[in-house]
Image (tube, rainbow over all chains, first blue to last red):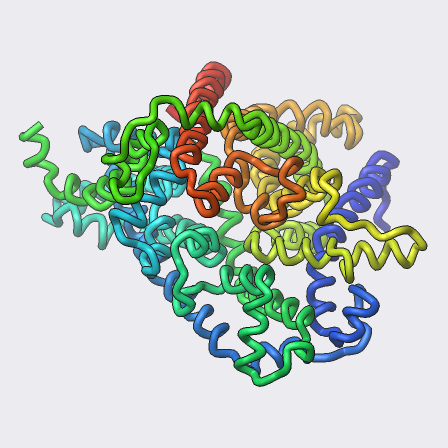
Length: 294
Length: 301
């Protein structure tokens, strides 16, 4: 039989209560949204939110799929930005951190400083915005969603410390075999760095998927609105709903407004939920890499 | 230099994309801070607009906004740092000491999940909890026979709401860093303490806490380095453009963002941004100097 000492028992009671409470606080807001999205509009508006749906109804979701054009397009924009941005960003991050991590590269410290300094001092939002719009002509361009999140000093440092853990002898062996620098990087180092690369890619990808501010700054064209910004507009602008009413041919007072918004929120959360086990594994390992000095 | 370039031509070439990238997106905007000293004209651009001396700064500091957004930014961040530290340490210690593997994993998974949600989603959740008509909290208040609260027009509540959701999003993720530090502690210390008759609480106080002090100091100093940077997403998504709440919730970053998109006063927004960058820079230099003295391995430069 399992016996506990007194202190262990007390610790477990306190510890489990504390953690249980925190988990509950974490889950309840999410459960409310899911339950609300499954409620009937009438019950929701009259009685407010409940932890369990009062009358199971899929009206909110039905509404979403009645005129799915905008949502599918927003999803497509997000996916395109995610794939293009993450693959390019992860590659450039790896290449940069590999070079500034090469101990036999004489100017690595100058380059490191050049990159590092940008995280200590920034010109601020306003000049950056004006340059993006007036000089680089990023307004209403899908590039405006990709370029700002492409590279990040912190990820470069994390990746650099990952490369530092790979023995230099591998580079030497490549040189002896007559491979050029680019080849050594692409065919020898990159495959070994895969676990680190995966972590970095997930962080970059998460940044892209959850980004809305760049869309708010640069995107006016409804065809280029990504998913998060679409949800934001839906929550904050009633004309979006009226617009949608026009497309579904429903009279405005009949639209299940609240359950529709909730259903949209759940739909935006869903992809993250399904890849969560995967995300968790790499992000957790990323924390330990990141805690090593860059 | 030329010799080095010949020898490592490929390595230099491999640096070209990032050098160009950071030049265009970081260094040119730094040059663009001259805007703070100009009165911006759309037809003349950043570098052609006429000079305005310190008028933009004067306007910002005289408007009464400067003190408000600065103190909001610093106070919110201080509250986030302190509450975050306590919660994250507690979570890490409890999880590290817990026996059941399944419960451990489940608790970690639940606490980490909000980290992956976008702030837009968090904003939507907050709206559903707090809105006047059918927000969950008002339903609860009504059910208990209490008067409803109009949260979206009562600034007083938002300190707590923002504090709660900032921790809600980050506690799981940041506790991982402390957990990693605790797991790194030599097990034989705990075994020796157990043999000497130390109980769980004594072991936590005498072994765990002292040994994660370095990690804790670094984490706190790094956050203090950023104390002048407001979490733009948090404040903008939860409060948005609700003017009633600005006095209680406006931070430098939301103020700059709104003045850039809303008003035409580009010069003043740029001045505010430059003010933030400079103060931030000084604070980072100071905290880094401290880190270098405490723990040279962790200093950033």
